[in-house]
Length: 71
Image 1 (cartoon, helix red, strand yellow):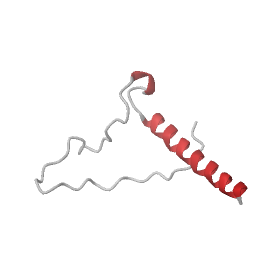
Image 2 (image 1 turned 90 degrees about the vertical axis):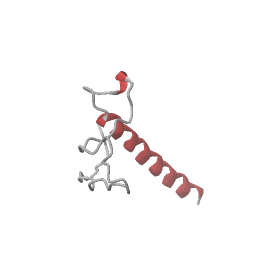
Image 3 (image 1 turned 30 degrees about the horizontal axis):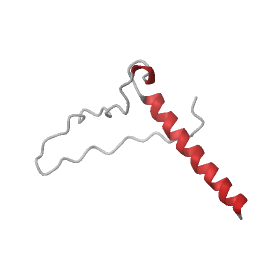
């Protein structure tokens, strides 16, 4: 379960380069972060992405505590 409180926002539509060709994931699907089946939940890596986000949040908070204690 995620402890973070991210606001859900729709990503801006991808901008196409000078070629005008759409990228392979232009259908709105985000490319998978992982492909190992053990890290996927019903073929989706959404929970893995939430885990990474939460780990980064915890790391930032731990760094703030470390800085506070150092003062």
